[in-house]
Length: 141
Length: 266
Image 1 (cartoon, one colour):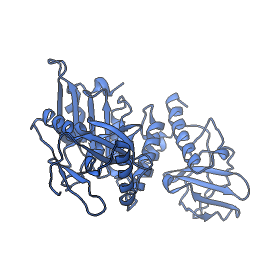
Image 2 (cartoon, chains in turn cyan, yellow):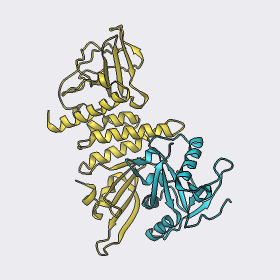
Image 3 (cartoon, rainbow over the protein chains, first blue to last red):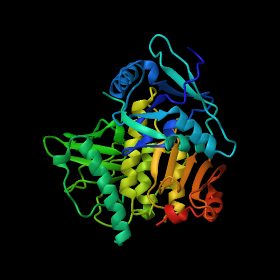
Image 4 (cartoon, rainbow over the protein chains, first blue to last red):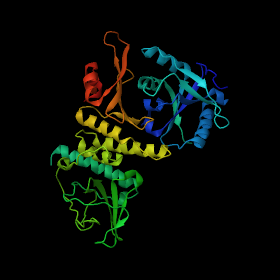
């Protein structure tokens, strides 16, 4: 449902372009917004209703292959919502609480969601989010 | 030739070799200890242009990803790889005869020299340089040890950005140029982690664990935004975090007192 809060216990995945990955490390640039972008696009993993992480990643790879030109080194970063929100709130000078909201794009990307409440010049927030990456997977099948 | 100049040339040689490998010409790439720059300029460049003085010689770019690299095939003979260097050619393959490649416009023979620093032949940088030109000049602009690694990384990033974006535009050239100028001004900085922002700007980070970080976002003008994480000296386990915006010329004046060079520099 559009606008539904993604719970802190759940997880989101971010498509990270090859140009934001060096070696095996996903860089802060993967979590930066373009100018005038309102939110950071992610996918709500639990909303995919799959039985395990492997199946969730496979579903995302399928979605990305339809929407994007995927670089060979592109990655999928998995983040826990509560961890990233707490990390950013506790380590920013203005105690910034990010909001993670469901924003389905129907019919092709129903788990699409957004991370709100930061802007394109908030490099420090991108750095903090990058430090909370739990898992990473190839974006290309 | 000084050791430093030799290292620079070797870095460029490795980059050229990588381009050759990308084109599948590795077997034709000859090892050479001494490479150099043509002393005489070619007046014009032409890709996919036959050379009038050698009817069976053909020149083409190596690939879209390596625009500065030129492939010259002399009939059924060997293929040679050259590198655009301003209006000059850098020979990267051995046994080039001076008459092999000539300018279609001026018919000036290219001379291959076997030694000498390229620093004195560096053309001035301009705002309208292509990303490929800037990357190629890394080897002659910088005196750092990691020029070959840096060049390879920038080529990789340019290729990635062009693949990812539907309009195939690459890295913002002004951002890249400011980044190179910064590295030139601070040669003691270590090799950074380099990635590209959504606006196609260069973002460089010097990290040592999660509590030591110095990142710079090189914007398309001479402005930058930066992030510094460093341990709080008075409170073990706590981290000082700050960010800001400035012009490139004053950045180090701001961050040096924060101790970033203790992990970002040699």
